Image 1 (cartoon, rainbow, N blue to C red):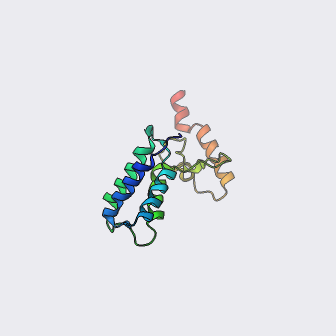
Image 2 (tube, rainbow, N blue to C red):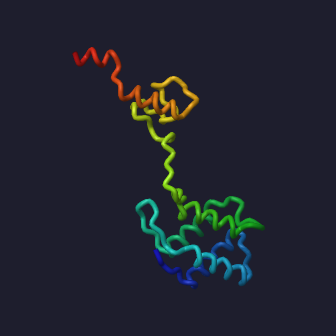
Image 3 (cartoon, rainbow, N blue to C red):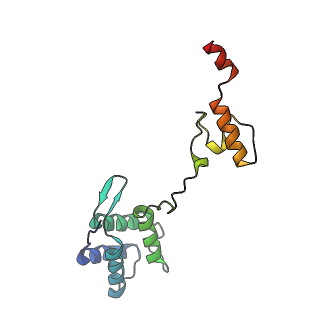
Length: 149
């Protein structure tokens, strides 16, 4: 999204951070306003559209309400940026499309993760474990065969 946060609004929001200890001199407020304009471009997160203005308002409200020690004497801007990134910059999937199938649920419907499947005895070799697992799942049990007959 390419939304633009107006500088006047960004400056007003940056001035409101002085209530939690942000430096009051003009240059610091302007610098934080410039940061807000740079970071807040609008986003689509969790099925919700966030305008640049809504992002900036959320970020300032989050800092004012949830920073119990107030604006840090050193490192306030990086802390504010990290708060922004945690909300509006979800981690990107790896470029090679790697999916860790060990974290997926097992196909035997045990409810356990594939790498910790309960139907196999522990096998150290992952290739052997996959082969053993696929044979176990594909091959019906003896009691299942009796039901069919």
